[in-house]
Image (cartoon, rainbow, N blue to C red; front, side, top):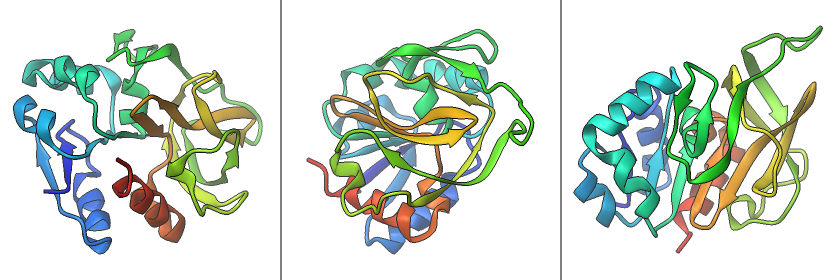
Length: 197
């Protein structure tokens, strides 16, 4: 096993597994905290509500073990949001690895919510996860909630105001977009994740 894919109840588990297979990696969906703790790399995917995902992660014990992990960890979409302290979606306490509150994206003319579609990444600081990713590369988003800009923001996407598209704190990284649905750019990002130590 190259990657532990945490079973957070999301519908994107199969597509993520296929994306890893195309890169020659083997991902295994699991919810056993002991197996996750010893995996070389961990992905926390997520589609759906923060409240439901956190309920599942707490019941399995995964929420308690996640902050202790020292290996590379990648949160995807809702999985990235769960790395923060709290989400306004259901007033949910999250894992608390990255400071901040995730809030609903304000709807505006030309920027409906949910935010769905392809948007450009704008790098704010270098990170190995984005190595060999061209400036203003396009990636695929589907979300109604977003974190706020902070020192942990690595890359942004403009949707009205800039939104954090990639975040990092220590060995924990997150992408608000879906790399498994973002074509060659997403594949490169997943390959970069697989090369992290």
